[in-house]
Each structure stands twice: as C-alpha cells, then as structure tokens.
Length: 508
Image 1 (cartoon, rainbow, N blue to C red):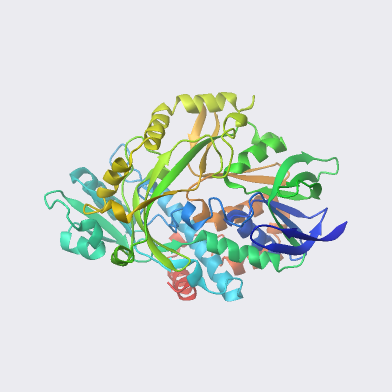
Image 2 (image 1 turned 90 degrees about the vertical axis):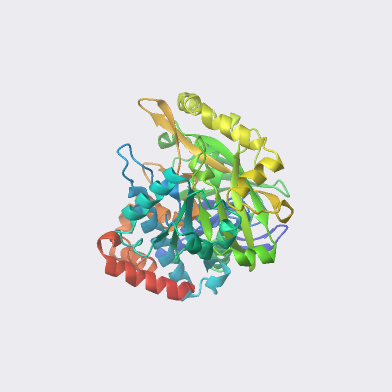
C-alpha cells in the first residue's frame, strides 16, 4: 500500500512517497543512516526507504558539527591509536587500520562530488594539518618512537618530526607562545589532515535521498516498537511527536543508526545476537573560541596524551574548526558522566537499559572501571578555573574571556560479554546484526563518522551478502570506493594515486 504524505517539522516540510511496506527502514538521520541510504540506492535504485528521526532536524545529535571534533580520523595525530607495548615498541596496527578506513571515506566523498550529489566539497571538508604534541622527556621519547614506527608505512611517509622550538613555533605559534624553554617538547605534523563538518555532509546526503523516488524522510517521529512478524518482515511502530499520531510500517530490512539511541532499539528487537550488550554513557564539553584574531593564528588540530584514567575519547586537543564557513577554535573534550544515551535523551536511558541478559556484563564492566567513573564524575564538577588550567597546557598565554563552554555530543561505549571478566567496556564501534541480515545496529563511538563508509560497506556485505558479491553490485562498489577489497598498505602506488585524486576533487 503506497500513499503520498506531507510531514511538517519546525525546520521544513517534507513531501515524499511514503509506503507502509518499504524495503528498508533507517532509524536516525545522522551520518551513518545517510551514508547507508545513499549506498543502498546506488546499489539498488528500486529500493524504497523510510527514514525516521526523533528530532525535528537532520544531524542534530552526534553528527552535528559542534557535537564532535570534526577530526578526519586518519590516525595521523591521535596517540591513543598507537599504544606503547610492554617491550617498549609501538603498536601501529590500529593506526594503519583507521588510516585505511579514512582513505575509503575520502574516496566515497570524492565520488559524491564528482556525481554532483554534494555540490561543493568546501561546505564540509577543509585541509587542516594534524599535529601530535608532547612535553617532558618520557613523552618526547614516546613520540619519537611513534614517528619512527609509522613513517615507514604508506600513508605516513610524509610525517614530519621535530624537537626544535623554532620549527614548532612555525607549526603552532599559539601553542608555543609563553612556553617554558627548559621543558623538552616534540611534535609530528601531517599537512594532509582534514577538518570535516559531518553535519553539513549529512544534510547534503539526506537532501539527495529526499530527491529520489521511493524515499521518505520523517522528522519528529519516534520508533516505539520493533517486532518480527511471521512473514519475516519487521513491524516498526512509530509515533509523530507533534500530533502523537501512530502508524506501523513493515520492512524487509531495518538499520538502527540512532547513535546512543541504537542500544534500546536493539534490545527492543529481541534478536539473539543483541543479547548481553549494554552501554556506558560518556558526556562531554568543549571550550570554544570565535575570536577571529586567534582563529587566524592557529591552523591545526593538535592532539596530546590523555590523562591517566581518562577514556580514549578524552584525549585533549586544540582544533581549528570550520563550520558554516566560520573559522573557530575548539579545545577539549572535558569528559563527564550522565545517564542519558543521547544529548536530547532521558536520564532514565541508562537505568532502563539493564536487562537479565546484560546484567552480569554491565555490573562486571562497572566494577572493572571504577577509576573511570570517578574520573568522569571529577570532570563533571570541574570549575571554570580548572578547565582553563587544562587549556593552559596547550595555550600558556590563554585569556579566558575569549572562550565559552559548549556541550558536546553524547557517546555510549559498548559493554559486552566476556568469558573471563564477565563483561568488558569496549571503545570503538561495533555492528550487531541478526543472523539472517534482516536488522542491524551500530553501537559505540570514535572514530565513528570518519570511518562510516567502511563500516556501512561491511554492514551491507553482512546483511546483503548474496547481492553484495554479485558482479553488478561489485562494479558499483568499486565505482564508489575504487580500492575496496585491496590493501593500499601493500600497494603504495595505488595509495598515492587515490590520495592525489581525492585531494584534487575535494580541494585538499
């Protein structure tokens, strides 16, 4: 049964084809659903898709430009991707993996621009150097070893290293200004880094989807129930927030891409593969500076080392941000604890997520991470003076009057079963899919949006395996991401070719 619907929200009126039996339902209008929707319509143009978003605007949660750091996570500067092993060597495996995934994102974005799906890359991506900065003899030694371990790999060959104060002052004048000359410092720099406005990119992708036949975007709609029917389709119950009207749709495939809200929906689905999963919420704040004089003097994303006990997502960094054409500076994040799973969520999200199947993993993970909880609570009660003190580590001559506090997006770290510990807290992202591929959820956080392309291609392969392996779909996948299925770490020439192409198309 098909109908034409008109849906009004506070931001727009969406008029589109709506069907009570769509092929695909995407829950959440963020970067993940937007990326998946565009890919699926490219692979199978006849698919009908319904998108349901709780809020009245697109990309209003974690994908929003000011809810994340906008770092094009390519492992160029993030020190937590290269831990030091017990023998003193540097483990670069995670960095190589993330770098390869971000290169796939760049290819897909270049394809979007060449196809005219995104009109102007300047609206969502900017070239911004990525710098790792440390002080003190121990951390300087670590950074030197990290540089030596990475620079031999394709993708990192152009990484510069220096302990020279004059050189570092050229790279990041604000960071070096007023610094104690007796304290040893070091930095690495990659000029090929980026700043990405994932909110702008998401809105462009959703706008493209809305223009396509068979796609309906429903803002201000809450998914209230998910049930598997006898015909193997998913009955999705939704409620429009403004009118409180309810309706049901029946879909062949459902993607739960609602950020922190994906876990309660996964639990609602009751699939065996989702049993035992829990979520630990981590909130965050930034200090933001819109002073054009300061913003003009800092052109980099400068990452340091996290404090002892801090989660990986709390690695401090001082960033150039370009959002809606405005250049600003961002420092943080200051982590914190709340029981909400979404920035616009409910304080009951966390307590209501406890289930008999995840009770042991949740309790075990909690008991095993008491220092983390104490750290997060300590961050919540920080005074403005304490936040400014943290910023002074990066900007010794900071003037607090130039900075204001901003709430960051909410993150929910994955808790899962562990045969030894009972339950563990996992940092990163994880796709949880039904055995038959009829429903999938994306849980977790960083590097998240930066690796959305690789994550969604992996999800499509898992949930549409037979079609994905067909010659027709493989040809289309190769058009979107030319190196998919190939190891660029084993083929430096291919890596250089792809990097040159994406740089030219994306204006980098």
